[in-house]
Picture 1 (cartoon, protein in one colour):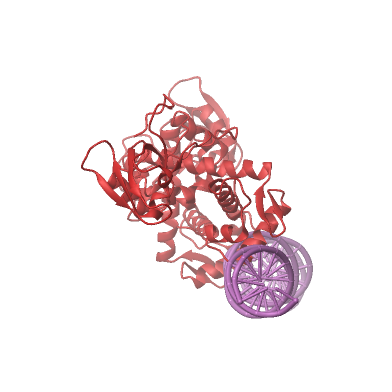
Picture 2 (cartoon, rainbow over the protein chains, first blue to last red):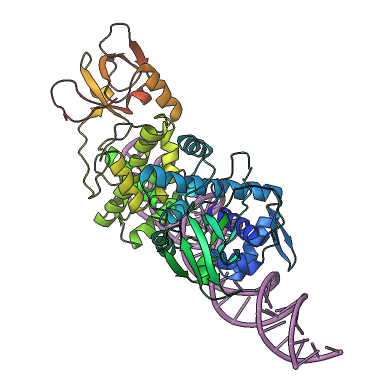
Length: 233
Length: 233
DNA sequence: TTTTGGTATTAGTCGAGACTAATCATAGCG
DNA sequence: CGCTATGATTAGTCTCGACTAATACCAAAA
């Protein structure tokens, strides 16, 4: 624990790697994620590579080494434990915790981590529905898909909402679009444009959602949560 | 909130200024307090002066300007609120909180500060008996004196124990020398050497204390004067 | 007055991490 | 098959804080 810049890079790489399913992460993407110029990123990525935390294949992008992944998970764990703790114990709202946790995560010791974990009853999910990595580095597999990937008429349960912008989060919360909520995709165009959704089972609560927002909402199937037939790409 | 190095310097200067009652603080003292070379301190003090946070009178030492004092108090407030919160809410022991708070204090936002303050019921004293500056910068005046300044035979109440070393703190706690404890100075030599003390009212609990340790213990007179509110443990 | 010693400051360097400007590599298109 | 857009890298610079070595200041002792 300790090196701010380093940890931020690892976290960013981890997140990018997981939202662009598994592929290597480009320098530019990292730079954008951190609000930094691409040369700065290149520079830093070299150092991370030298430290054995990432694999940097020339002009191809980077991937975390096992060591790097472990370090990244540690940071993510701190972040999500903090988010949950701040909302549970100190009354933060889900739209503001992110920023606070971002600052605190780098100062969390092993001991504090353990105490937070215990105080929360060893939770597995943070306030946005993201999984909290376990102390041993295990992460519960997320098997949810972006809201727009539902078929028109299909219903789902909101699993997580992965945006950091407080304003958007507040807006979504107003609509009732928080983890656990039932949502039905009424209709949408194939690849772009807004979608119409119904939140909950009530008749009245139909809303139009911009695509941008919708793709940050992840749902799991509404029905009986079953079967390992994981064929849905 | 934000600049680690800067805040550490301000905090150090503040503390030094208050333990050597009111006088200006020397460069060397600052350097020692921060574990840094004197040139580094000189260098940094210049920057603090340029930023208007301290007055740097040539070869005479530094004092905090009003702005600097305000900033320093903010850091101290964060530190002490954290120490108290960590012990109250997360079960930390008084000997280990210091290090944890040292790391976290720089990442505490106004909002978190306020929430901690509220969760703790607007406390005025941290686990070591040090006063917690109020949000407006007010600090309750400490009116206690070092244990060795008692006259032989005189009794007092431990007000605060101002050491950061976990081992020493654990030792003192073992002896029962924690804020709120009654202590009687049995006898001692004028300026150096160990002292004999009795802790509490019992007959059996007499101990010999090294001078070093004893000067970190501050007592107030045993008699009447009292803030009625404080339920110190 | 000169010496000596403690303390502060200057001078010069270094590493981390950021930046801009310029160059290079590659994929896709014409 | 070459050209161009996109993205990555190199080169060079800056600031922040730290460091060592050398120097300057002041105070008491000789």
